[in-house]
Image (tube, helix red, strand yellow):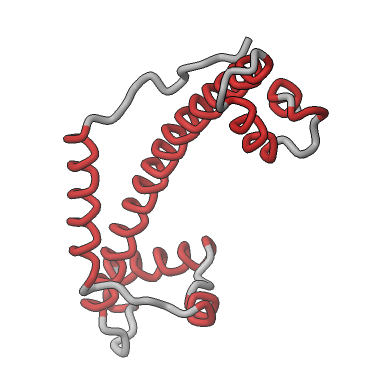
Length: 161
């Protein structure tokens, strides 16, 4: 027997509105400050790996603790602003990744519930078609297309493949 109703918790209309409004605020806040990089630019500028980030951190540490060793050719105010923005973005990306996972898991359980209920409906329709109840033969014929690799379009076999 299939497990049904994994997604028993549903978002209220107000929660959906709140989420959409919060996303709009984030989008609007970022709009004037972000760049839209091409694939080539992402490749070119996105090469600061973890080792290079440690290098940046070490240079920053020297500039903050031993200013006499810092290059006068670097705009350290701009360097610090870039560093703070990078740190901010990095921590928010972690939070957004968590939110993405939460929404993905939420969607998965509701997709699963819908699919299990659709299988039940298909089996019911096959039963009713067998009793010659009007409309069900056509419905079963239409739904069979979703089970091309099963004998007779059996929903039970399709679920296990």
